[in-house]
Amino acid sequence: MTTTKSTNTVWHHATVSRADRENLHQHKSVIIWFTGLSGSGKSTLAHAVEDYLHNMGISTFVLDGDNVRHGLCSDLTFSDHDRVENIRRIGEVAKLIIEAGVITLTAFISPFKSDRNAARNLVPHGEFLEIYCQCPIETCEQRDVKGLYKKARAGQIPFFTGIDSPYEAPENPELAVNTKEQSLDESVQSVINLLINRGIIKDEAVTKQG
Image 1: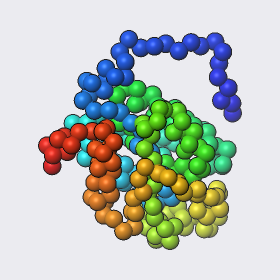
Image 2 (image 1 turned 45 degrees about the horizontal axis):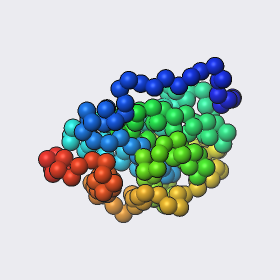
Image 3 (image 1 turned 180 degrees about the vertical axis):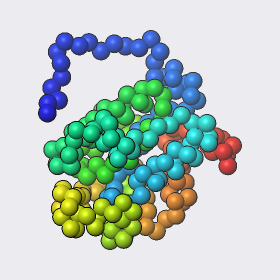
Image 4 (image 1 turned 180 degrees about the horizontal axis):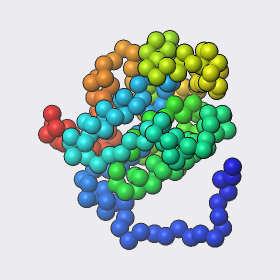
């Protein structure tokens, strides 16, 4: 698999700019990148945040790890090499979506710091918000809502993060959410507060939604 760029393409600058689209939506667009072990609550939190924002009239889209592997990344395995390519593709797609003025939420284990940093570096400073869903592997394994840990322990799923493949926790995420101790509502509010404090959404929109 190659990621070499073609030398026969020229970037086309759109007539309608990202700023125009953000002005239409009345909010800024950013990538909200949820990372954590399987079972840490990434997808649950991402979709709950999207639901909250949608009720505020904010344009959003969630890129979910399992869903993406049904189509865009259906040709990839869970080897370290393919995980890198998986996250590279997601980063590029997320970059395109925020150009549409849409707040983009991604829910991926994304176990390697270098891959998350590569995704961060695709966009200007402040437009990539890393949310670490912090949860002990023991708790994630107890939840095991998909039965994946059980299969991994039985040797049925190779390269499973936390079992036989490493997870490199974020060192300086924009937000760490303790999904073992915090309720879902509390976790959602933490993310919403971050968006308000960063000027991505307006406080009055939250008041109206409440």
